[in-house]
Image (cartoon, rainbow, N blue to C red; front, side, top):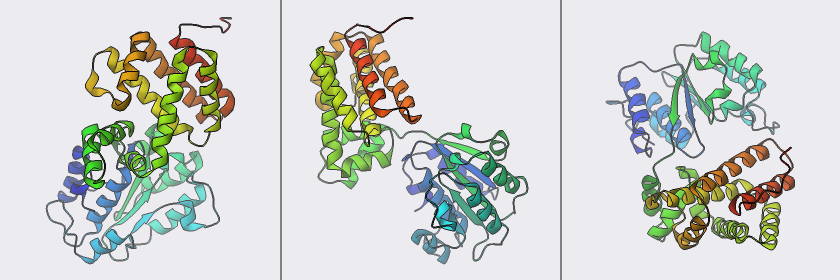
Length: 344
């Protein structure tokens, strides 16, 4: 894939193409952003440009041996680093220090066919201090032919010494209209309204949008999530109990459920501010209007903050059942202006 074919991120693509055109390619880059926003796709396209035998004006030719091998994923000088690459028995997805050491032993071997070797490290922000310090030794004295691309969701996880030796590019979520256009182009049977909803729910991530488009179960889970929100909004204990049961039984898909909830509460904020074009869940707009009439704009913000807070608790492996029960209760209390918890 050519850099110009990557969806969005025009500033980043231009900067990378210019670095090749002007022969000032860096030794280390950090591509930071949410999953599905194009970090890996951009890294692969940039790697192809770097191994292209006949680049022109910052573009790969697409037909040389280097481009053909890069497109097929078989170029010997482009390495995507995982633990399993060096040890198939490793199960962890976090980048381990042994993996970094194995990568280092390769780095000082000159390229096989290209003028440059490219190492792409997914989930690089999962490296612990020991792994980062091991990598730092390469970044301090990198071979002139080597470029390392660290893929991360949060660059704050890196040591300051790593950050100071890398060029950081932040991949912002894609615009909803761009994601919608992509879905309509790739799914001929998708309606415009369905594409609008899925694009909004994707959070600017093509990966998430494709999952929503290809997975019919995701649609059903979204409907159930919207129903659970409406149960909480009913005001009776039976509705609250039903919502808690739904959240408890869907532990494996809780990330998706929380994303749907966040989209609903963002919509309530937009409706309160009369910014209707920004709403995502257009197919349930009538129900959202009724709920928005029941609460204040401040309450809508509180609902969103509650979900973010409990999402953080779940990330810290606090009991799923207890966490979702407390979250549903707080949402119920916020909507109905009740608080029976101790203030002590």
